[in-house]
Structures are given as C-alpha cells and as structure tokens.
Length: 290
Image (cartoon, rainbow, N blue to C red; front, top):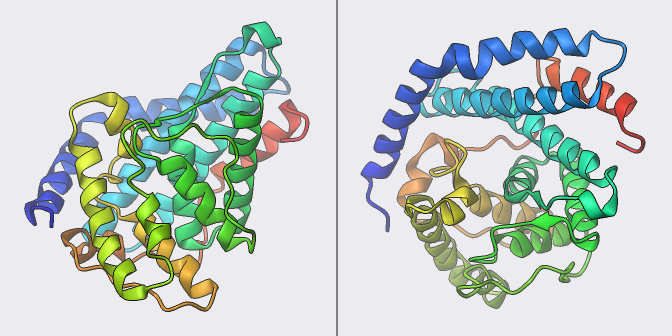
C-alpha cells in the first residue's frame, strides 16, 4: 500500500500551487478568452492563443475543484468536472487543428491527457465526453498523429474499458505494446474473479502512485494534472463499468480510497458555469465536424 501521507502531501502541494497562480493561470487567460469568444472570426494565431488559454484555465479549474473535494466543500465535483470538460474540448481542438494542416506538416498530437479525460468521463458516467474522446483517440491513432505515454499500457487499457462500457468487445485500435510491460493487462486476466480483481484494484492504486511519483515527465505526465496523482480514477471507472454490465463490483483496500476523491458522483455534475458550452459552440463554428 502507498504511504498514508501521500494524500496529505499532495493536498498541501495543491493548496500552495493554487494560492500562488490564481491571476496568471486563471483570471488573466479567462478574461482574454472571453474577449476572443466574442469575435466573429478568429485567425490562426488567435486560435492557437485561445487553445493555450483554455488549457491553462482547465488545469486551474481541475485543481481548484480537486482541493474543494479534498476539503469536503460543496461544489468540488462540479468544478473538477467543468475543468475536465474544458480539457476534453482543448484536446479535441488540438486534434482538429492538427488534422487540417497539410500531411507533411502535422506534428504528433501529444495527447496522453485524453486517456485521463476519458477515464474520468467513464467514472462519472459522462457518455457524451466519453464517446467524443474515444472517437478522437481512435482517429488520431489511425491517422498516425497520436503521441502517447507508452511506458505502462494505460491508453489501451482505458480504450478497452470504454469498449466494454459501450457493449463492444475489447480490441486494440492500433496502440503499440507497452515499453516496460503492460501494468494494466492484469485487470483483464482477473476480470472474471471479483475477489482477485479487488486485489488488483489495490495494485493499480500502487501503480498509479508509482507513476505519479517518478521524477520523469515521460512517466509523470500520465497523471500529471493535480489532483490526479491521488485521484484513483481508473479504479472508479472499473467499478462503474462492472456495475453497468451487471457484474459484482470490486472493492479497493488502499490509501487512495480513503480520500474524498474516491467518492465520485454517480451522474455527471450539472455545470452552472457555461464556459464549456460556449467554447464548444465556437469550435463547431471554426472546425467542420467538431
């Protein structure tokens, strides 16, 4: 099991980060993004700037919501979910922008956060975001522009979990094998035994903490958005999918499951801030098929 102090330590770090970055990461980019959203049309430079602003805003809102959850203050899950909704839009935005470039000028769509966003969408039952994220991940892989963290097999695991949630068979959409062993394959090995799967869920939390603790961006990026280093989102997603399929739901004896972040809502939180709605409307105007 992880050190029980990991939640306490991460909460402290999150609180300090939020206390020193409010204006730079949220207030200023939010104000500037609101101005751009009012324009009739955005040129390429403005689209890039707006995308960067949205990424900054989403990270801040996710962190703020996460801290509210950890402090057991009301509105925390709504705020975290708003941040994830904004992140999902930013990720899809980057993909659409990549694909409208000439083939010889397309950079890899570095999108490990898309797997994280998809896992959260599954965990809280956000079907719309889950479908959109899975679709864009599949397209990105097929077009050869998906740049992922391939060390531990997280992306194919999440896609397989989504496929089961949708009622489909598990299949590989084209991801390369994990470079250092597929740490998530054991879930499928023990899928038919809830007792063994419960043990595996605790091991997944250990894997989660290990990846988040490695001082290497290639690994840490997998859970690099605070508070995802202590948000056991993949286990919550497993539990939700199992329940939906009518299977016994595994338990999880782990320090991460003693945190309020293990108490995800059963339905997507209703959002009082309409920023993601307005951004989505704007992107549909800018990109065909968004």
